[in-house]
Amino acid sequence: MAKYKYPAIFTLNELGGYCVNFPDIQGGYADGKDLTEARERAKSVLSLMLYTYETEGIKILPPAKKNEIKAPKGAIVEIISCNIDDYRESFNTGRAKAVAKEAAEERITKHFKRNTYRVVKSKQISSAKFKSFKSGAKNKRQAQR
Image 1 (spheres, rainbow, N blue to C red):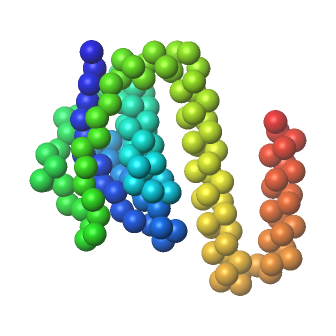
Image 2: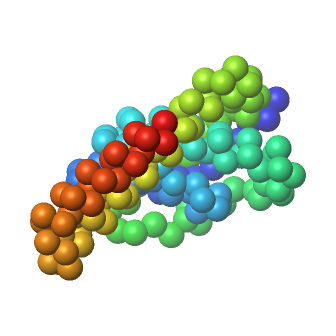
């Protein structure tokens, strides 16, 4: 049975939710509107990343100790555990594929909204051009489905 425990850093974001980072897992990021949701998503991300490492033959490095983690002031460091065997079983049923796809689409949408808001706010483009661009992107995504 493949059980893992890795430290995660939970930091409060500007929207009042939490961003999660796994210092020992490259690309291991999650977020949540509150600490409970952030923990659940962190467990899913950890499972997905370690499952991917296993299936692609990438060496899984041992986790750092909790007291060795250098976290920003005000951040929370917690140990997140997961069971890859359970995840593998759910992944093979397709549920995890759908969840991973949904999470990826949500992250892309948030990233798009945040960055386009910053562009409009900094007056690099007008609000009218932004609305035109936004509706065009939405129509393009719908056409791809």
